Length: 368
Image (cartoon, rainbow, N blue to C red; front, side, top):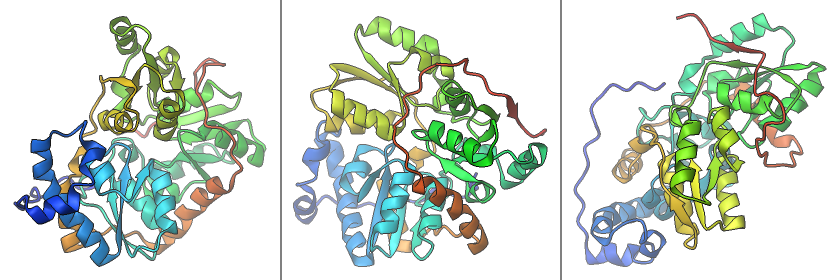
């Protein structure tokens, strides 16, 4: 995980002026149901300054689904899940990419856009899941299971991707695992590093899964009892869960899928009452796009996502810090498994249902 040491960034004081008002009035309706006007007057000067600097520096901001609404809707040029954002950045003509997300996402953007300058507003914005495994760990796994393909979740660092045969996302993991097994002529696949994603994949395939003892600290905290209590207090609520949650949580849910999958479910089905079992800001953002849907709001905050703020984004553009750099050899190795995944003719946004016992062949972890 990136170094968490060092002083906090100082927040510059910006006034709310008539010029700021003119530049931002058209944006406020996007977030008015989520942000009170008194808070908007504090945020708007940063939004105006950021949007001005983007034009000056030919920059784009990638806003992950877990960003707060003022970032997601008012300064983000592309919004979505981590891989979707990196793909959009690669297609853009921007010279500079600012990653409003966590560090591994900025690395993925750099892998797919090596010629662009990639900035992360706070280098301490790491990820408990990505930091659970290293490239050296993957090499040891390959020694222990020779000839077994390695499927790596995109929520990992560049050095881990560089040791990988093919990447996957939470929505296509089942298909990628089955593809890898077929390509290698094996009945076993290493799927790292999220043990809960691996268990949920194992519930949908006959392929034996070897995984790693990694987990997302947001999703691993949800329990089946949480879901039952939500249903008891909100009769008829539709429960959507992320596949990084434990299998017993998914077993209690009505639908499970990636952040994009959950957002699309709400948009397509317009349930009367819904709860998203994932990071808090996801519900805020999806609610603003679906005003006719009532959102039940128990959720967990990601402390790393919340390190990204409007003042830090502004400072990043002003100072061109903090630039994400990766060894060119690692970039080349890490890009291949991502491109292999993108090239697959994947057909479904998997709903994780328990057709099999949700068990994996082994959960590996290095001794401390």
